[in-house]
Length: 116
Length: 114
Figure (cartoon, chains in turn cyan, green):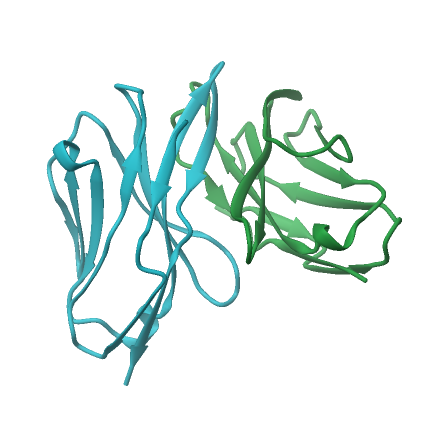
């Protein structure tokens, strides 16, 4: 069965520090997709990134960057120069496709607190 | 483009009652998925609909059901509510012609069962 593990339950840093959120996944599929979502206190899950299993190139978007390593089944997320607005719960997810339908398997989430 | 909308945003029910939650997907999106989020179990997949057909179902009892209309709007129903059904119910939509598209989530409906 597919599984996503986010070992860090909570992280607290001071503003402007860099922070990395870890994500390790398990799957037997050769083709799969990985996602990161942000959940602010309002509750809505905000899409951040999607990566397919054939694209191991790291991606940078502003202060956000993602490191995908198939060899270690990891898809880590780094926020550079963190800001208070980055405070949220972050979820890593793995897609599972059955009969054409997509189902997301989520990790337990990492609660990130950025202190001023 | 308007995002995914869910109504109502908050609900309070008592044990034994039933509840219906509504989800309107992003315009053009034909797939709607539902997830339950609780502090203990995290985010769990309920079911997914595409073109009015349920394509996938999670491991939930039959009290949880859903449907999708021809305009892609979806509803989920929970009958005979239990205290453990208290949760944030999230709806997500995607183009999902092939099941690999990104899912975009609504703000959720927070259900409290007393």
